[in-house]
Image (tube, rainbow, N blue to C red; front, side):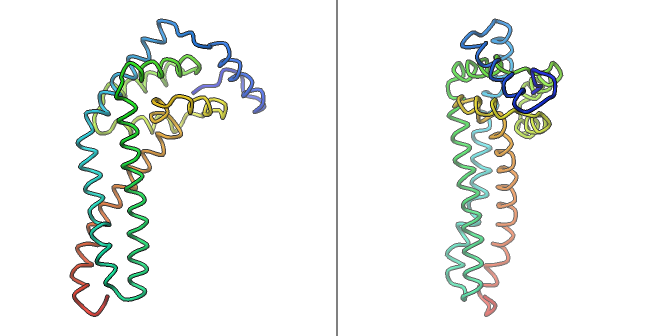
Length: 214
C-alpha cells in the first residue's frame, strides 16, 4: 500500500493515515464499491472451491503425527521423548492450519458482507493502480495458487501500524490481507512439510520399531 504522504517521520505518516480514516467515515463511493466487488467475489468463490482440496491437504498432513504418537509411546526413553516432541510440534502446526482454514471459510460465507468489508477497507487505503491491478488479476485467476500469488504481492507492500490496527477491525477481510495472509501462506508451507516429512518418518519408524534400535 502506498502511503498518502511524502516519506518522513513515522509520526507524520501515522497522522496522515489517521486523518484518512476519519475522512472516509462510513462513506463508500460507487467506484470503490465496484473495485471491491471485482476483488472480493473471486476471492470468496475460490476460497469456497478450495474447501475440499484444503480438507484433503489437511487430512494428509494430520495422519502421520497421529499415527506416530502410539508408536513413539512404545519406544525407549530418549527416542520416546524426541518422538513425542516432534509429534506434538507437528500436531500444533496441523491444528493451526485447520483453525485458519475454518476461519477463512466462515469469512466468505456471506459474500455480500465480505464485499462490504473489502469496500470499506479499500476506502481508507491508497492502493496504487499497478498494485491494485496485480491483486485483481491474482484474484480473477483463482485456483489453488491464489494465496501464494496474493501473499507474494502483499509481501512487498509496506503497511503502516495504524492501518494494520484498522485491518483487525474487519473480521472477514483481515484473513485475506497482511499480516494474517502472510502467516496463512507460511502455515500452508509448514503443513506441507509436516505431511511430507511425516509420511517419510512413518515409513521408516514402523519397520525400526520391530528392531531393538527403538
